[in-house]
Image 1: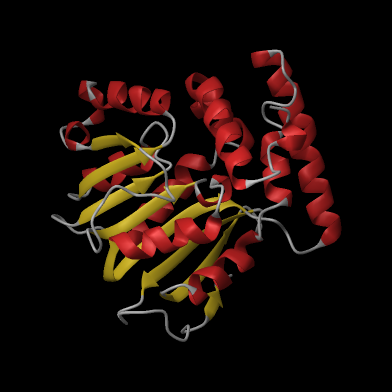
Image 2: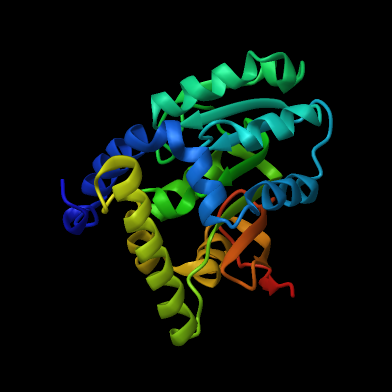
Length: 258
């Protein structure tokens, strides 16, 4: 499937994402560090700190990749499950968990292959849901948000790290051009396919951006929705609380922190 047709439908995107991440899994951590200017680990540490994980809480890490956020919540005492649609990613995560340097908590993380839009868990099963670069990649964002709301207990917390789509047209154009050129170069060097990492700017173009995601969360059983800008607003962390109401209710508003 070509990159041009990857966004034709939810199923086309699902198929493309599965193939893409299976291809890049073994180089995923390297690419993430390069495209985040080496800041990825700091942003994830910030996210986990904001989460306020307490020992014994139940945590779910979606689009878990090689397990960074899953291991971090487990290290703080959470009973953590990591879910990813790409089996190879989870093989690498399990390999990391078996290393002595990962710490005893990491070995207790359970990894499951699955789809964010069809989570294999009972309702209200988790206190915390985290995801790094997950919401931008789902084929149906609203369905994923609904599933996250379903598996979170009322009052539970969602924290999501992802690229933003800057509001300023000049900044947005320069940012996407940089990602496109850099992605094409890395794709050719590592895979002999320049489209491999050009998926990132193409996915951002179709992404509602930090503000748009916050509005969708506020409309779909989440309140206390906050957007925390990172890297001058080119990245963002969303923090939201699952509404304590039994059904969707009026949002408490969207707050932007400088």
